[in-house]
Image 1 (cartoon, rainbow, N blue to C red):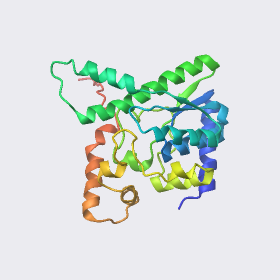
Image 2 (image 1 turned 60 degrees about the horizontal axis):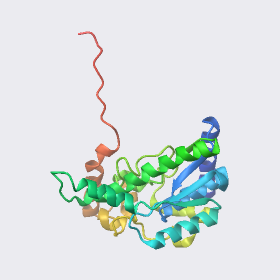
Image 3 (image 1 turned 30 degrees about the vertical axis):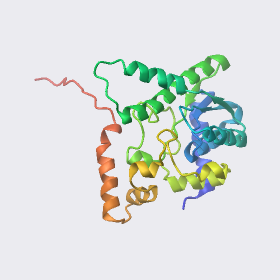
Length: 252
């Protein structure tokens, strides 16, 4: 168990200090209707005031209930919510891709396109509102420690952000933070899913977030789950950094 009150206050101070030092004015948060984005939206609204937080729901052939849940979060924390439907953009992209001579159906390409379109949308809106309101907006990340450990994120999609506040918290710890700040229960206890593929996160991963947290903390779990988690971690190592060549300037 974490010290909820202490961690909430530390996160709030971290946000306020960062914004002050960098002369920032507001934040854009993609609200997917899940616990992570709900907690992030809530913490930023407490730290900056709801008037400086803009939530964005980005349906892409999504469940209509997701938008209703996003409205619950926005209403709870007094932030504005934009509904930016990407379904037609996604369809247009697919039609263009199908014109390629070497086109083949790739489920991973189709699924990962959605978070990449969403991240482009968030940065577009961040720059638009920076100009409109004459203050700098940045994009908040919503990933947690368990997701990041096994690489459960999309390169160029939800991996991209300007500030992260949940990366050192497991899923259970995120729930504890959410309980402390009053994230709506319907959102906080929802079965984790990406809102894109139609299956839960744990179904996609083949392991539980609880087991991932145990591996991170060094606890013993059954070998099958342990091997799968280590496999995911090692398989996705390439997601954690960008390979960069540096020229050799030493004298030969």
